[in-house]
Image (cartoon, rainbow, N blue to C red; front, side, top):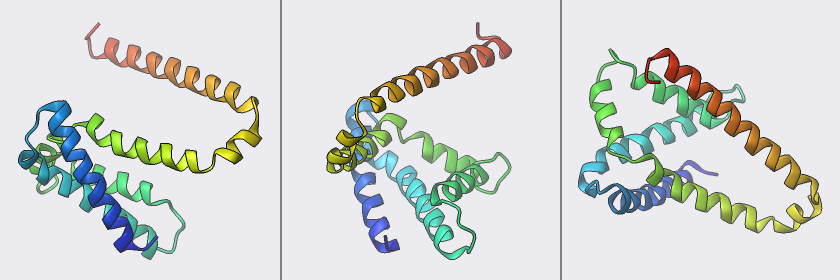
Length: 148
């Protein structure tokens, strides 16, 4: 995908997220716009890095790395960036992404049918393992910080 196309998709997702943010979390769109622009900027920067840096690393790795660096306390502007990002509800952000994933899977339904019933078992094992693993980690962390 060209960077211009990626930017167009990110802007569409951003608009859908702002609407979901307003409906679901009651955060006015005008308050969430700086955070959405910030998230889109980090994403597009990560995509650009993935294209220009000769090492074959996925764009998502660059996006996460950039996001972590610019929000570290002490980084210039980190408090402002964090305040902006807090105005964007995580669930509002995942809604358009999951819709896109659903459309993508639906387009390859024939391939999914060919994998057969085994994929169902593998999916259940992965989901249950992820749930149990997340629960164990949450339990340990909550005990360590004294919440339970």
